[in-house]
Image 1 (cartoon, one colour):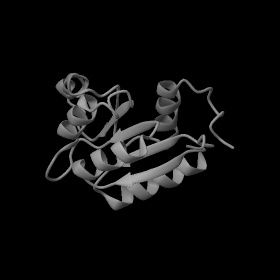
Image 2 (cartoon, rainbow, N blue to C red; image 1 turned 90 degrees about the horizontal axis):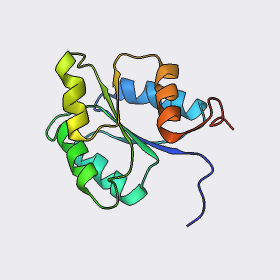
Image 3 (cartoon, helix red, strand yellow; image 1 turned 45 degrees about the vertical axis):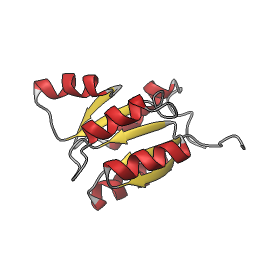
Image 4 (cartoon, helix red, strand yellow; image 1 turned 60 degrees about the vertical axis):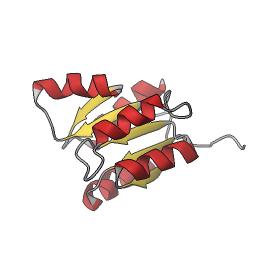
Length: 133
């Protein structure tokens, strides 16, 4: 398999406007973005594509992001992929719940896109600004 030129981000969100905004900004910041709109679609794409990182909305219809994350973290091909909980749930217990589900970081929506990029860079061990090419 050919080496990737840019890190791949799997963006999981059921709101088209959120996907469009984050996808556009992440693309500008130097990432290739793959989108999913549901938990099952996220699991399927993660298993097939092995993205470098997953941004997971926790409030998804049907299988929510909590369950999708638990399944990803129990899968042999996907367990080591960092998952960032990207959610509007800002209550104090949600951070701990996200950690227990397997999330590696927690970002509250709405967030500034550059704050999201900084979190991605931190989890991927990138030097800020190095992803842009």
